[in-house]
Length: 101
View 1 (cartoon, rainbow, N blue to C red):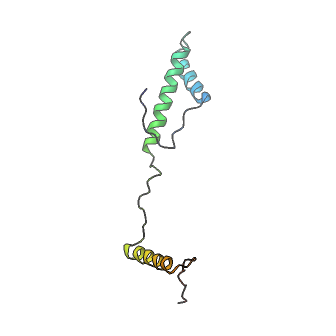
View 2 (cartoon, rainbow, N blue to C red):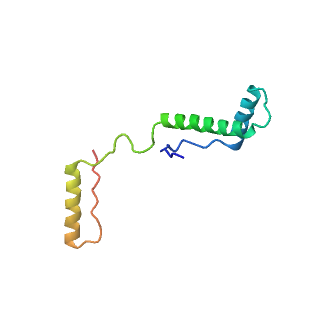
View 3 (tube, rainbow, N blue to C red):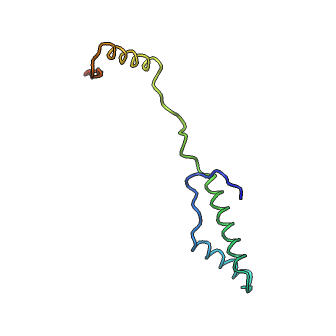
């Protein structure tokens, strides 16, 4: 069996869903005797195909469209201040003071 990458929104069809689809197909074909496993397999394959197609149309959750990262200058200032605190031997990290505007 070929495995494909499917998003998290894909769910296997339940026993009841397969049973209902198989029953409806069996009734539609005139209720032939001795073909129950054929209708079951056909219904299961069709439901899985429909679910996989629907899951492929949904947008993936990961990765997000845009990853926000700090600007290089802010990042450089932050690492510099951390290095200064570590070099001074202080155990606490200096916090930026909030200023009232």
